[in-house]
Image (cartoon, rainbow, N blue to C red; front, top):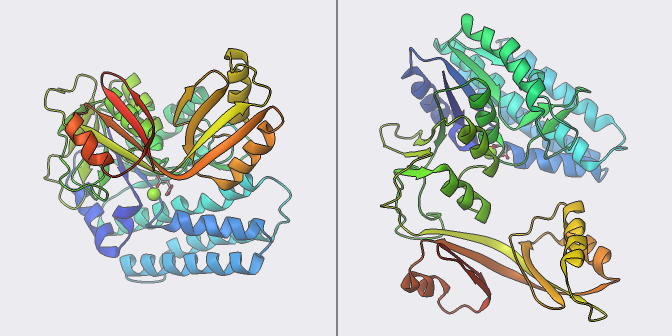
Length: 421
Ligand code: ASP
Ligand code: MG
């Protein structure tokens, strides 16, 4: 059994969906669990529907939803060549449910409604691809992953109930492979025990695939992307990037943690725990070697790895009464960050102050100021970048920081981080 994951970019045009079909067809003997995310930028569009609904701009929300509906119907019609296929009824059903949500008064949290609406993207894309595959002779079974992935109700970042989900996968998913070689499931979504839809965090389909790989004891997981494989830096930001043929789980987890948008950070653990290799391959040319991520990768040829996180804020918290920022104070401050779900990207403490670098989210920063202002003075500096280089060379570092002010720097034997203005 292999697990494949196709992301939004691989479904953003009819031509690309055909390419996805050709890739799957080139594994005729294989049992494949295929995880698919929403087409193109659908998730972003659905986020706008949720936001407008919650602001009670219902007409705008309905119009945006209607646009998404038309786009998907057009794609399905182009792929299937007719509008009579049963798939159109299924799509209709999904939209009717979303319209019901739009008809509600928003009495619950924004995150709850977000998940009820945004989960639609993956239901639509998988239903369309599954129908298209079956019509093309790629026989497959469509799975509603919400019947299998059980989570808590931490909407927008739900946590998988490992035991319940494992049981469902063994009892409901494995037997599907007796009748079919291919099962198609949604990435990114799941369900609570109350049958409420949840999402697992933006870009979470990689993680969904890893959960399947772990629980199905897959021999490998492949993430099909529009790039050649993992590179030592984001090619959109840096010239002359180098392809990495193999790299360890731990190195990738570090890269993702520092902000490289290569693979969802939660993806590695389920794979590492069962020693399942993760392959990153290009769906535009499946013969390119790509990247293998596994435990004992050979790192002797590894180039410097560069990660640049944009739109950062450096916050300095200083105690008003000159009290030392000791462990108990740091623990109080941390609790506030944790409560507001603010992730600290880098931190440093001094006698009466504590500095940290976080993503710029004005709403959260406002809440943070409110929560801290009684005991602490807060200063912050916006519009910064957090540069991380692993296996750094000094010449390269100076080149990357050229002409910029370094507001803070941390260095270990392997990693250097700089906050740049
Ligand atoms: N469609 C979701 C997103 O765009 C999940 C994913 O792509 O992995 O965030
Ligand atoms: Mg996506």
